[in-house]
Image (cartoon, rainbow, N blue to C red; front, side, top):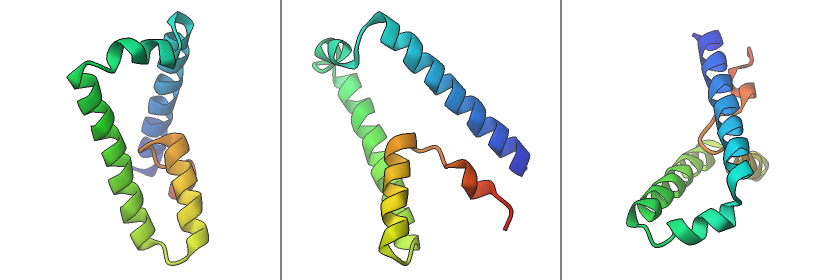
Length: 92
């Protein structure tokens, strides 16, 4: 199962990087935002994503006992989104 999850998450990371690269070739995030911002579905999706990240981070911060891991997790969650980092699957 561990190998499957690592492969699954790696595939998602690669897909997200590829679609981000492809989208950036057409227009910038700021150019796209001007047209998308008034759309209620864009706002709903954006808020859902950020609330999902916030919920995940609050749960992680609750589980961590000290400040340093909480800060590191915050940085990783901001950088990777909801995708868990590969070290979560390292052997203990």
